[in-house]
Structure formats: structure tokens, C-alpha cells
Image (cartoon, one colour):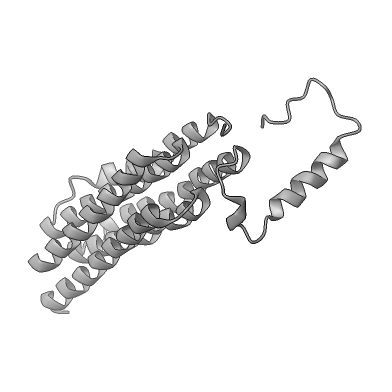
Amino acid sequence: MTSAVIIVGLLLGFAALCALYRIARGPSILDRVLAIDVLLAIIGGALAVDMAVNRHLDNIVLLVGISVIGFIGSVTVARFVTDRK
Amino acid sequence: MSDTLIDVVTAVLMIGGALMSVAAGVGLLRFPDLLTRMHAATKPQVLGLLLFLLAMGLQMRSWVLIPVLLVCWIFMLLTVPVSAHMVGRAGYRTKHLRRDLLSMDELDEVVEKAANKKAPGRNPTERPDET
């Protein structure tokens, strides 16, 4: 179980770094907002892994809340995108 | 079922979910434009979350938890298409896509047809780029 947790942590960390690179690099605001959504999903997955491994339910409300209202941010940004050039 | 077997299944589910996240990360890193990146981005949001929640349910083994996990996943299924739709539409309208990579653009024909039909009696106060 411990080795599996280490593997999962490394994989999630790598994925989060990729998403962070895309957030920093752009090139447009839509790419950034998409990468932020992915980062949110990765963080939610990490919370779920923590709950599964340590057998507690502290973060379940946060996870449900993310899945209910997590889309509002990207919808709001997408509404106000301006034309390229 | 023995505890070891459940632990192994949980580990496999968690690694599967983490691999979905890595697929999305590599997709964000390598794909050339917005629409292809959107394709990669949905993997951890839907399938990855399902695998993680299954791992949680297996470790907890309480019936009270199942509806909560179901609600979590179903709301994710309902809201992810909304944001993907808005981002995709905004990307199409503001030309954040590479035309040379598209093999087919069915929306273009539809938009053209609608514009031709609408053109004669168009109300000048109407703002076509709104909605």
C-alpha cells in the first residue's frame, strides 16, 4: 500500500507540474482556464487518495462542493474572452 | 474478501486515476491548440474522479458513504460539459483554434447557412456576436 501511495503521489505531482507549466505559458486565457480546471481535478484526486489511504472523511464536503460549483469559474472567464489580435 | 485483496484493488484504482491525471498533464503539455487540449483535459475530471471515488468507497466500506460519492460523481458529470461547452464556444468564436489542423468543420457550414437565411430581414439593433 505504501509503495502504491508513493507512485500515485509522484504521478499526481508530475501531472500537476504539467498543468502549472500550461498555466504559466499560456498562450491564451482559455488555455490557462482549462489548465486550472485540470489542476483542480488533480487536487481533488489527491484529496480523495488521502481520504482513502488514511480512512477519514474530512474532505468529502470539499470534494462534493468542487464538483457542484467548480465549473462557474471557467464559464465566467469564457464569457469575457476577447478576439485574438 | 480479505483485506489484502481489497488493498490491492484500491492501489490499482488509485494508480489508474493518477495515470488519467498524467495523461491530461502530458496532453496539456504536448497538444498544439485549445480544442485538442480540451480533449485531454476531461480525463481526470470524469474517469479519474470515478476511479478515485471507487478506491475511497472500497477502503471505507460503509453504505452511508455510497450516495455521497454518487452525488459527487454525477454532479461532476453534469457540470464538466457545461464548462467545456462554454470554453469551446468561446475558443471557436474568438478563433483560438488552428484551422490547418481541422479535417472537418461542420459548424462553419451551419453558421454560414444561418447567416445567409437571416441576412435579408436583419434587425439593425440586433447584436449578432452576442448570445
